[in-house]
Image (cartoon, rainbow, N blue to C red; front, side, top):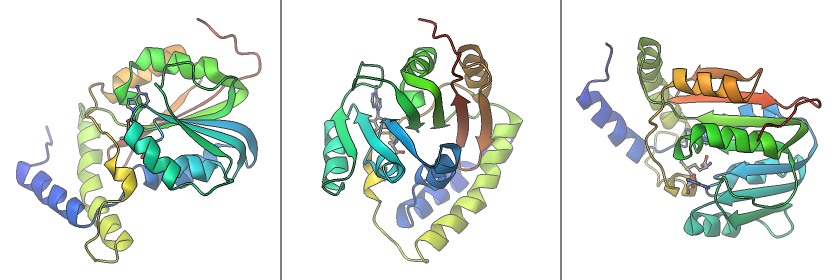
Length: 225
Ligand SMILES: C[S@@+](CC[C@H](N)C(=O)[O-])C[C@H]1O[C@@H](n2cnc3c(N)ncnc32)[C@H](O)[C@@H]1O
């Protein structure tokens, strides 16, 4: 077993609080590459301070960000210029939310807050035929591969934090004030469940304690309830 020694974990935490950077936002550019250049409607589930929703709005005609935390939804609204095609609502990820289906659904660092099978089935139902689901998620460290990737993420984390903050100390970005929790499911469980609910789904372990999931709903996909 390769576990991070507690002293290394503490040193990393100290470094990250002095030179904070958003590990979720690190994947925003990658998310944009998974979706069409222009699309109609997008839903960002668990939108936090709305950074991704505002980015999606540069490509979409309409973006809805939903989050169950009223305080972070307020921050998202404050940071959004008037006239941007983005709305934010306090809503549960698995609730009905705004009417209609979506061409793009994104869900970043939120899936482990939700019942996995229910959430994936819900996203499948809300996706329009031809639409794309993009998830950046967190999984529990279980296997040697998880551990090695976690270990490799440590120096990479320090390098990115140092470069992004130009070596200076900085306050936490607003996005990092959103509610967090630890992941309970391992990557293997997530892969199994995702393959069951979303045929043809692609998942990959990533650096910085994240995995990614991409699924495109085909036009002949039959929704199972
Ligand atoms: C770690 S934050 C990620 C926020 C944002 N997606 C980002 O990348 O910065 C997790 C977010 O999920 C939200 N959340 C947790 N459970 C939720 C639920 N059942 N419905 C909607 N949002 C939820 C939290 O309020 C929090 O803003």
